[in-house]
Amino acid sequence: MLIRHAPDLTDNDVTDRSLYLRRREFIGGAAGLGLLAAAGAASARGLAYSPGFSTTETPTPKKDITSYNNFYEFGVNKEDPSENAGSLKTRPWTIRVDGECEKPASFAIDDLIKANKLEERIYRMRCVEGWSMVIPWVGFPLKDLLTQVKPTSKAKFVAFETLMRPSEMPGQRWDTLQWPYREGLRIDEATHPLTILAVGLYGDVLPNQNGAPLRLVVPWKYGFKGIKSIVRISLVERMPATAWNVLAPREYGFYSNVNPAVDHPRWSQATERRIGEFRRRETLPFNGYGQYVADLYRGMDLKRNF
Image (cartoon, rainbow, N blue to C red):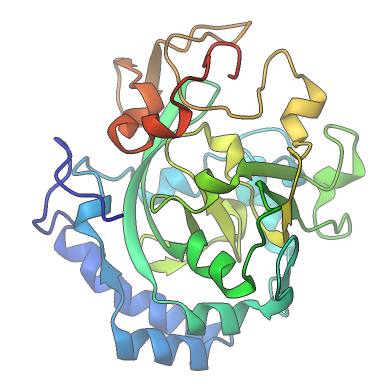
């Protein structure tokens, strides 16, 4: 399914010149991190920009995206990830894909980048806390990776797991959440064309504080669904446990679709604060991606299945 012609999407190139130039920096930066082979392959194919997938909204400045984060493995304050994530070593890095599939496999991150066509997707991101950003990600569809391992008919959900390494992720030394961090999607959500695995942003290699070297991006769901620093992806038959749902099931549901009509028990979700803006704006159902994903939930009570 190719997504096109949304009211806020265009076939014109909406990325400004500086973003296009920064694609070259992404390739150069990747080589500097030992991704020379992968970057060379990406360069040969070209780092594609996907106007049919991207919002025309102005991206949030990179300094805000990289300094205002929730990544509890590095601390509970917004500035903690940018201050503490430098300790994380992202090479070597292996992602295991297993479970209900015919060809389970392990992938070195460099090989994964080399094997997939990288695209730039400019997506809205809405946090459950009530703030939002617009982020130019670099990545590839999760579906492309799952196809390689050939899911069986028993694969109804996809479970994700973050690295567990307290020596480099100091927040894991505290019982803030049940570590390692876990997340999950239904299989049709995971294979939707909007769902990507990100390896970069703003044309650069993904910073540690934003989930390096590999994170999930599901733009119609609240940001905490975008699990960071992934080491394992498992195809499973039953709905997997997820970190925030385990901690506070009344506050954080499994689906966590952006829904202004369903308030968090402690605050309204009707509006949001876009980082960099003074006034609050109305929150859009499914974060503005409803015409593409609403059918995934046809017949479901989205207040009960929040």
